Image 1 (spheres, chains in turn yellow, orange):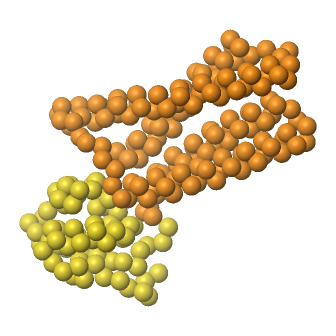
Image 2 (image 1 turned 180 degrees about the horizontal axis):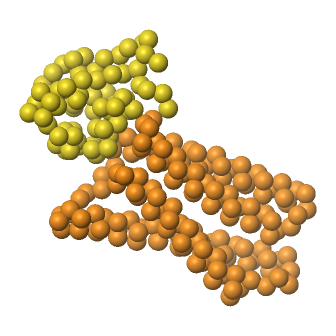
Image 3 (image 1 turned 90 degrees about the vertical axis):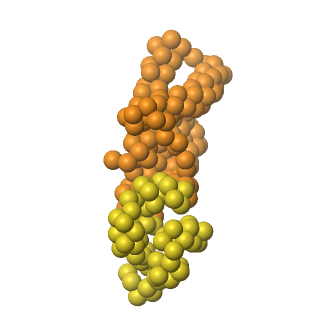
Length: 73
Length: 149
């Protein structure tokens, strides 16, 4: 299972948001903590809907939370 | 180990325990090596027909017990066991793995029939394919939860 070409800044954004926990973020967007862990590690690319929900929690535009790197393996 | 991984392994364990107890019960109470072909067909049909609801009911009971245990570990607060998009994708992929191996087992079972090996070989192959499919489904679930999809 290759790493996703979609990378994200969720760990950094959680830190900037008063060290928000993964559990709090999971509850805010309605998924399990395991899903947040997988997204943070780049092991899972979320759906567009979940990506927008995450961006909304951090009050950032989508491209500041997620980026797509075609050259990534 | 996460709740989802634990659930996958508990499901596998439940499957084995129920399967072993039921197989032992059927073997000791109903198995007769002198059965004719027609009697064998009735025996296997009944045995398999009872296995399916038995496995479903035992999985539901274990699921409830697991959630109660999880709630007790959480200080009496019941935790909602909701399934999100990550769970659904893993569910689909694990089911695909399971169906693939069960289909191979079914073809092997048909091969036994085609080469005249008898009904017992056919049904035992199907049962073993089911067990193998269940094991591989649980393993693939745990691997996908750990390594992502």
